[in-house]
Each structure stands twice: as structure tokens, then as C-alpha cells.
Length: 138
Image (cartoon, rainbow, N blue to C red; front, side, top):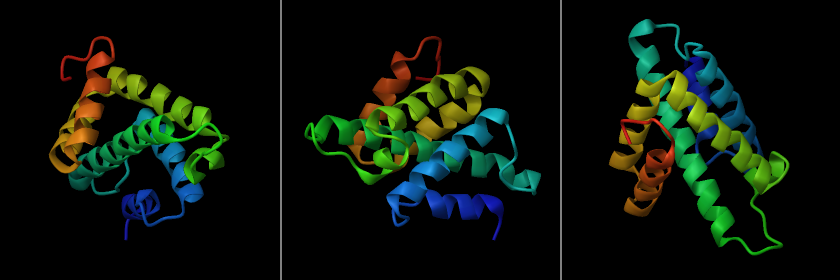
């Protein structure tokens, strides 16, 4: 198994929410830095796209969870990063930065989410990306 495969496992919904939240923050930093997620260059781009799509899906889910949560409720992933505002801060600052520095990865991630996510999540992801300034792909 490669590093990217291990990271994908950590980002999977079957992983405990606190660990998944920490993995999401680490993955966002690696993507922003442009670090290859696979030693084999032939697979590195596909792995980046898959991880970026997972992060976009997690962001949309975090926004939806916050919208659905009561004032006293908070999910485990949000709590692991210091609360729902912290989780949103991490991922909300990540997406505009990724779209600015690596627009191809961001565009392919959005396309993957639109193709694989439930319609409501895909629509929410598309609306979020369209609201970011200067994103021609949205």
C-alpha cells in the first residue's frame, strides 16, 4: 500500500471522526504544498484528485452538519479540531487557496464530487466553488 492509499483509508467514513479530521487537515497541507501523494508519477495526479475530492466532500458535509446541528450539538470531527468553527476554518481556507494555486486539482475534485456525491451534496459543492472569486471552472 502507498502513502496515498493509507491517507485515503484515514479519510474514509469508516475511520473514527477525530482521526479523519486530523488526516483531512494534514492532507490539505500536503495538497497546498504540492507534495506528491504517490511515488509513482503516473498515479500521483489521480491520487491528488481523489484526496482533493474527498476533502471537498468533507467540507460540504461539515457545512451541512453545522446547518443541521442544534446549538448544543457538535460532531466528533469538528470537536477533534477544536469545534465546528475550527473545522470550517481549516477547510474553508484550504479551498480558495487550492483553487488559486492548483486550479486543475480543484476543478477535477469538483468534477469528481459532482459525479459521485448525492445530488444535494454536489449542488452544494458546485455553489460553494462558484462563489469563490476567479474560478473559471465553477
